[in-house]
Length: 306
Image (tube, rainbow, N blue to C red; front, side, top):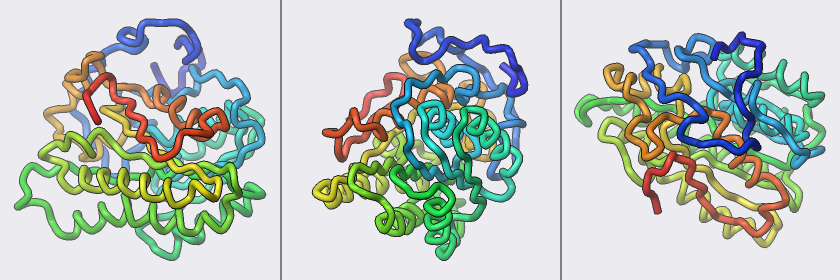
């Protein structure tokens, strides 16, 4: 399916269907993009819900900030939230502007407000500015999705530089700490914080030592903050994706020779499409999950996890 294809040929997430065959088992060709990678240049293209996500009003009037919202998982969540009635502030790197503009266009087509806020989450000052800008642009804030992440595959620990280790931790876990801390000044009771962890937190790949360890840290941070904030009426949960086809994989997130087999080792036999994650975030953001606190919801095609 092309990103530019206007023909809605995908069944939506509410249609009874076989999950094995809802999407084909793709064999992505070897390809490379410079970090951070763009959805519009990904082959094959992804389904972020632009044609397949059907909303039911579950987030009507809500105001969400999503990091890493230009492509992949974050873009799918942004589209899902907008289709469910939420206004969305999108954070992304300046190099991802082209992808972000497309997601903003889709959000606005849903009749919702899109607030683009480009910036680098390794910049400590920007993390606080981001939250303030989102709350101002949206007229408040009651959903925070900490989704942005950095993943670079390295075959040997001896080749993993201290610079990469530090930047991965700054992006993946320090930014979550800083953004969450800043957001608490704006989030009223009833708000939701959702963090993106990973199957890598439980089953780390040998080429992703730095990335996987940050995802385990996110799990722990989520559960600790869930207990701390529950009495204040703010729910904190996480989503742990398995292998999803996104630009993260081709911008050195996976060894190039492994791309054609990406996701085929799952029990479902294929990689996930980003839109298949959106309902998990919608559920955790909506009032229907009012008694779900400190949960890590695994969406991984059947890969065993705690």
